[in-house]
Length: 271
Image (tube, rainbow, N blue to C red; front, side):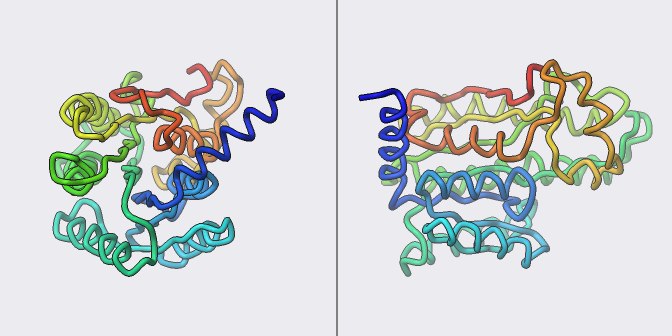
C-alpha cells in the first residue's frame, strides 16, 4: 500500500469511528469554534454548535456541517451562567434521544473573551469577573456536565474534552491583558488536573494553546490590526488560521489521539 493510500485509509477509519458520536463546541458560531465544528464534521462527528447571541452565525455553521453529510443543531447558552449550561446539556441529551444528533462523545471548551489592552493597575473588578466567569468558570461548568455523561464511573461510554488555552498562558500578556493570560494559565492547570482525575474513566482531556490566529477576537479586544503587527515576531513569519487550530482540536477528539491526555498542544508557528 502506498503512503497516500495509507493516509486515506487512516482518515477513512477515523471517520468511521467518529460516526455515531457528537461533539459539543462552545462558542461555535465564529472563529476557532466554527472551524473546530467543521473540522470535526470532516472527521465524521455530528456537532452541537453553542452560541450566546448570534443565532444566524450559529445556523451558518450548522449548515456547513450538514453540507458535509453530518448532523448538527445549534443551542443557545451563556456558559458563564450555571443554569444555562445545565439547560444546554439537557438539550443535547434530548437531541440524542430524538436522533437529531448522535450520543455525546466530546466537548470543546472554546467559548472565551478578551478585553481592551491595559495594564494591571487599570483593571477593575467587573472586568476580572467577566474574564474568569467566561474563560474559566464556564469551562469548569461545561466539563463537569460532560464528565457526568461520559465517565465510565457514571455509566458513560468515555469520550474526550479539549480546552482552549492560549500561548498567553506562558507569555503572560504584559502591558495588554495579564488577566486573560492568567485565566488561560488556569485552563492549563485545570486540563492537567482533570486529565489525571478521569484517566481511568475513559475520558481524555487535553488543551490547545493557539498563538497569533486570524480571527475577529482581536477586533473585539480593540486591536483589529494585532495580527499584522505581531506576525513578524512569529518564527514562521505569519499568523495561523482558525482551520489550523480546528484540525488540531479535531485530532485530539479523534481515536488517532487515543494515548494523548493531559497534554498542552501549542499551535503557534513556533512562537
